[in-house]
Image (cartoon, rainbow, N blue to C red; front, side):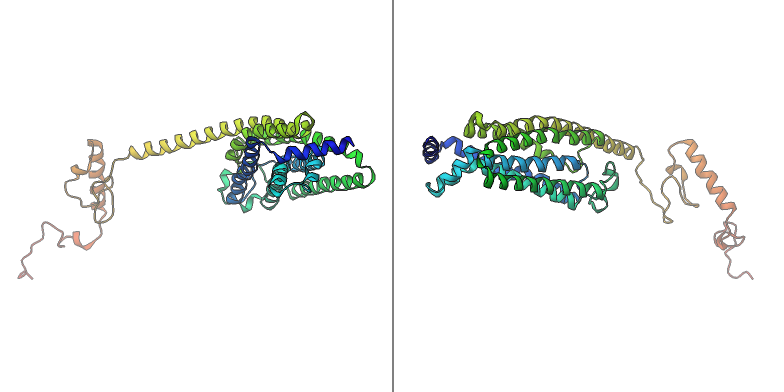
Length: 348
């Protein structure tokens, strides 16, 4: 009887959703979709998941799976789903926004998991080889990540189905257990990624914009779930508090290495410009293609091509050496290039 009264009270609450909480919940769902897009785009555009730890993907996907199962099995969520039989469509959808939030997160992270498996090899990347750090994961590692992820999801489905039909009251124990599992996996999830980023000293295919959105978004998400579920839903909103804290550490590390990389690139660019500006610009080009510092053999007024006496001496030495080695008929005795030739055509 008390359970029916509690359910009826819950349905009455869903008929009058708070405007602020409703707007925040919708923004979180949309924000989750937007926040994961930069990560998906970055992996696809680079053609590689380089820089992303396979164990980060494994722990993240299993954590999202356990978190989604947790909120589906919570007593409050089951009451909300049951109330949809009595509520209008709008009120039903508004009441299920908390479940939709974790559902969207699970779908997005699962898609990133698929992208990791598709692009885990570095030889298919669209980036220069010198920008790839470390070695690509072996196919055995990718297979292990895929197998453990699928096995984890299958175990949750099987155990939940058995409890639903054999001992439904045990779901109130199983749901918090899943939430605790999700929280632990989420907390541990970022350690391999933090280590990978620290070891590579660059972000690779990890998306900084995604983390910039999700770190404060995780705190907002946790607050939204707390407002909806109260202290009884600690196993749900606690996940996002832990995730936001660990993600904040990873974000700070990624920004630090990205700033260092940009400074190195700027320094190298400035060094190249300085070297180029030190060269004397060409202001003469001879018919034979020689530049100013290497004038042709028969250049008139070589002093105009020298910046100092030493350079003039080198030019004169070269011209004298080239003239001495000349074999062209024009400079042979009597040739038209000979200044002592007699040009009297009547002469035999």
